[in-house]
Length: 392
Image 1 (tube, rainbow, N blue to C red):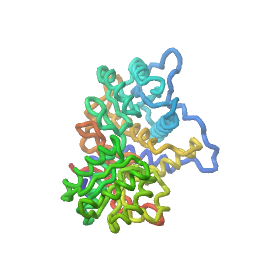
Image 2: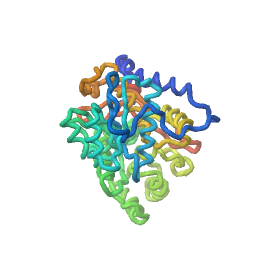
Image 3: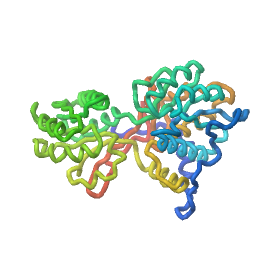
Image 4: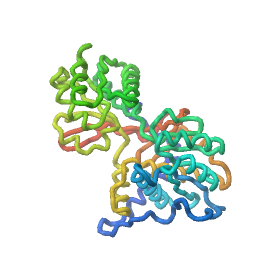
């Protein structure tokens, strides 16, 4: 990803409705002294609603498939609340969104949504649910815009809005390479995330003219982590090390890396660090870099969300908000009664939202414009802003 990219005029025109509506909504936030509204506004329906849904002649039916009960209910409710806010902020006059609970069975939720005449699925959240929903949706000609980040379920009618670890790694590695790092090492947790992170590190380092000199895996136990760190320098020196895990592991690892030979190595992280607000309290993390979506607009959304619902949103709530922005934008040129215009999803100019610019590639995975952040004693700052759009 280029360090700086000039947005194309067509991109700004395409994205304008999302940012204009959201900014307008932010300017009319409920004052902090106002009593919070505990329930979602009545612009969104939640199944069941009785023997049948009202017949729409003026609005497109869109299904929001998220867990509303069970272990992930709080995340699903947060996504649904944010989707409601997006409808309010945009007017949403041409879109009716109905929520279906995937926790009681994703297959059943999908069948109900199709029977109700929905022409677009927003969600599900979990990759396993995407696998279940994809086949009946595809048979009905209904695209799935999922909140998962598992690339294995993308394609053939499924589009992923989730934040891609490989893109985060690519962005921070390329930035580190541009700042002089050439020899990269990696600390990778065992499991699928670690394996994918290892592949991403190797690809990004080599593609940017660097090399990976050491990759070590650990099982998150203190002994395993210490052993892995001790082996990092066996193949020679390194000037940057990627810790492909959360902040808790990074805070434990960095002092050991310094003692084990990585005295001046730049510490790199993944998108997992974006939600951890305590990293700057650890002196060892000072100067570390990680890449994630830009946070400024999300912070405004979170403020507005707390004012309306009386609690903080989950970070993934922004996916619900941005998926509705995308839907409302496309609905301007979508004739009521027709199938969803799938080709609009892969417009190369992309879309804009709370999480910045994004576009769907041919593989169905959302390519995102990411920023590089630096951890400091005073907090987290941005050292390389996210591009505002895409140039090719």
